Image (spheres, rainbow, N blue to C red):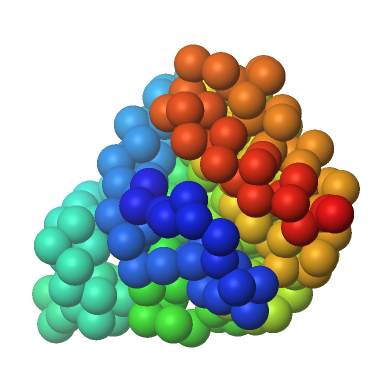
Length: 227
């Protein structure tokens, strides 16, 4: 994450959190979602119900999703959302196949696209419709909700999402970045006590993460602001 560790003016802290340099992170979420949801689809539910009712529908939904997913990966956002004459777009897949993993995944894709387009309210609503229970996809989507709240100037909600994502993930791959984002928002609110506490958590609990190597500068900055 490319972020200056020099002191930032408070009115630029939220802008720093959601900088365009993080767009690739949001896009890469999709690759993880595909794998995890595929596994969920295999093991979920009662065999007979899946075999004779849900499975055929899920397979058709997955087929429909393929082209939209390809367009998403290639950043052809309009095609991914709306589809073409021969293929459904994510918006229609989410509606038509709402009970399938592909329909569920479509909400995540749509949310990511809307976020990238600057449609933060719409992105947030789509991300709220997506559901996952493991410790990679779910926290990553929760973190993106926090980014939406930042852009919508709802710092308290952003903090809640970032902290929830960090707690739910509870790993060095995701949690430190979420906590760093929460700390930045605390700073924007001049809540230096909680900002310092958050940064210290990164340093002490996630000391093997890359963020732990640079958070010392954040701690020094916040300590100076508290004086």
